Image (cartoon, rainbow, N blue to C red):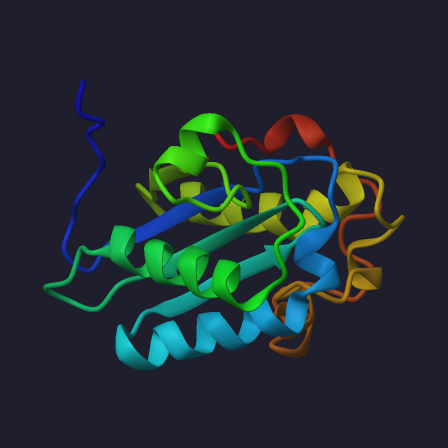
Amino acid sequence: MRYRRANIDGGTYFFTVNLAQRDRALLVEQVEILQTVIRETKARHPFHIDAFVILPDQLHAIWTLPAEDRDYPTRWMLIKAGFSRRIGTSERRSESRINKGERGIWQRRYWEHLIRDEEDYTKHVDYIHYNPVKHGHVARAQDWPHSTFHRFVAQGVYPPDWGGMIDEGRFGERP
């Protein structure tokens, strides 16, 4: 069965990308490498990062692609492969991955969602920025360093203490 993805030129998309081993903290341990690979990918295949958070075992992002461009799968492939090539080999690998010559760092698939409207956009931006609190990494969104939350505060979108009394029921990856 072929997985069908939403493909809209110049679209804005929400993504969740997970490590294969969800008990690892690899993404924050190697955050500089991940950020470098993302910058390099953006330089070769431009896109705008609307919102982003890097957690220990997953990341969430909202990207807007250039007009007449819908190729986010190539960008994710470059990010995942570039990151994998730059870190040591300590992950568990299944026989299937070994036979295919694959590393065992990332889950093969990722979740993507085409943002439909302004309300959908706001809901997913809030979800991204609240995620470190939701997972118990910090008590306040402002305390998580690997997030565009700080950019949103600097731009006046959020107050610094945003998210203290959030109703988590209004967030969700699958609206």
